[in-house]
Image (cartoon, rainbow, N blue to C red; front, side, top):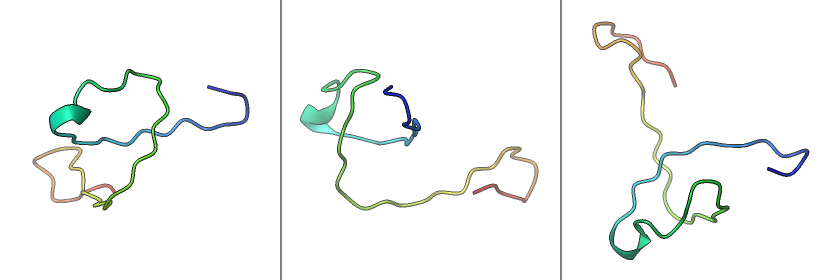
Amino acid sequence: MPAGQTPHTVTLFVHGNLVESVQPGDRVAVTGIYRAMAVRINPRMRNVNS
């Protein structure tokens, strides 16, 4: 990672020929629809974190 840049993590689900086409650490440009999903830290609690 070059100095001055912040690493970002985004989970992507890919299909077909996109599977195994990049390696960890590769830079990618993603175009598409972003859909945010709530994450439950504890499945027994009703609260979610965004």
